Length: 107
Image 1 (cartoon, one colour):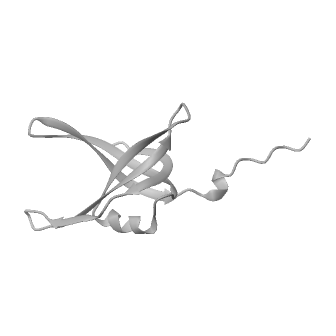
Image 2: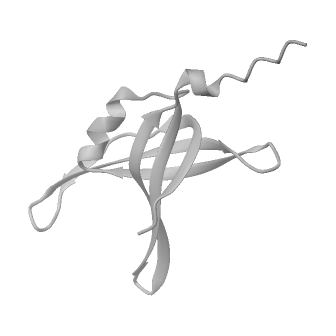
Image 3: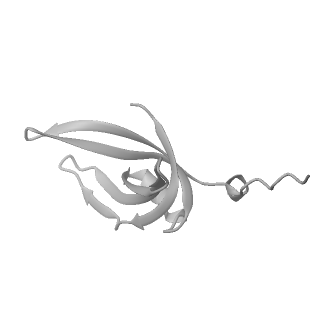
């Protein structure tokens, strides 16, 4: 599993979904969407799935927060069709100081 990193702005936080598996395990899942800058200066979106204990970690975040996330992409087959999973591994607020543009050098 390769870890990818991206910086962006949270643009959507889905409802928390919860249930119990057939094996009796409790589960929770939430989807968040990030707006990320692309190479040509426009924004694209990436939807990330957050599972189980990490759902609690998201309660400190809200729409509009600037964050850096670590995520993994995996593929799986179901019923003869292939699907990609984009799973959130880590999330951190971006440091506002690091976001500030450097001051121009006085001449």
